[in-house]
Image 1: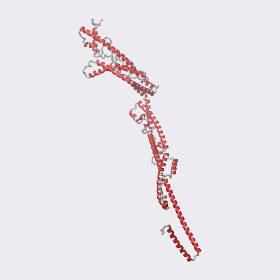
Image 2 (image 1 turned 45 degrees about the horizontal axis):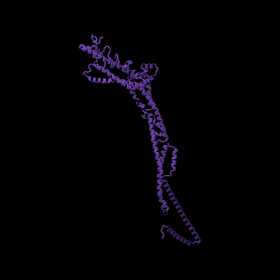
Image 3 (image 1 turned 120 degrees about the vertical axis):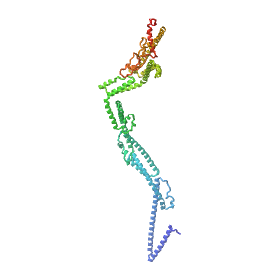
Image 4 (image 1 turned 30 degrees about the horizontal axis):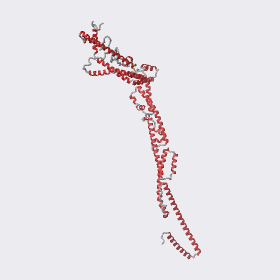
Length: 608
């Protein structure tokens, strides 16, 4: 049995039908009476027509097969191309799997979904590439300054490599994009840093920030977001040059303002400008004490600020010219006060009288004269600093001399041992004074050594109110030695007087009356020696203007002798007062009177 639908079954059915039709046709031809030749001709024609129909159908089927083969081949090639472009792993194609068991249409139907899927993947991959390319082109354009040549080169490069849509290539583009994004971020931060620095410099200089940055590129100060900030090399270079230009301008203005403010300070000090007026320029005065890079206050170096300070300097300069003589006299007075305090002789070339005469005559510029006095003041301050140690020793020596004078006055007080108010305090002071007085010779010797060492070091004499200190100290030592010798002679004389008084008592058996002996004392408390003048002097302070026959020479007493210009009114002199003995003046006067009486007796040992 033949299966229905099979090729053999179809041929059998067709053959049966043709035979039936052929028999029917032959019957018709018999009935018609056709000749055998005509029958053969018509059968040949019928066979030819059938062959033509079969051939046409075969040709059509062959063409259809060829087209199916082409479609399958084209799809297979497209699959291969898509897989190669997308970088998909080489999977088994449905076309090649079980090739002998599937018809062309089945193969075509099986591979069509794969093709569609690969096409979708390609479109998505193309979109990814397009997005990455667009960002790369944009950032590259921003970095290159929107150069048309570089942009075209980049587009051509991307177009030529468009067939490579693999993930590897996409990752390369994405890596390149990230690199460009990082470079853009770095450049943008650098540009913003430069712009901020320009903004700060413009603020300090009082310049127009918008106009300044727009000179480099308009996008650096945009008011909308349509145009991105330019980050090209030319913009960075322009910003660097602008910053350097602004820094140079800041340096020049800083130095100018610093000079002007220094002049302003100098004029303020010369004119003794009140603090209230100085406060007006407080925001610029700190420039003198600041560095250039630390100045950030807006407008501090603007031309308006510098002109304002310069105008003030010009105003003070004009005022200074009118008050220059007054300033010279004031500074000269300050110089003399400083010399008085430090006991240094001032330079007489700039004395008040000479300075006034020179200014009035117009022979000397008051500014030069003032500068000369300023130099002298500085020299005096420097010298006073080098003399400080010696001056401190002089003060201690003079203080010891004052204690010595006080002790002598204290010893002359008959009521010093009374239990009155403050008596114990004076006793303690007297004890301390005796300890201090014993140190005076050592103090003087050390002071001489220090002074000589200072003179050797400075190669000049140490003058105290115009007199060499070594000479003062040597005179003091000599006078003190003479006093000591006088004290010794006095004690020897007193011993002799006491001996005579003892002999007188042994002869007459009586003592002089205290009232009679006290009548020999002078009202001022000084004692009288036996025909040799007054008792040797010891250091004692006296009031200003007191004159005494003998002086224990000290630097202050020298200043009283040698300086008559009125600078030193507090001159300490060492007067001739009784020696540092307790209650000597009583025995002294008594012994003097008895000596004179005893010498008048006939049997006196002093006769003859």
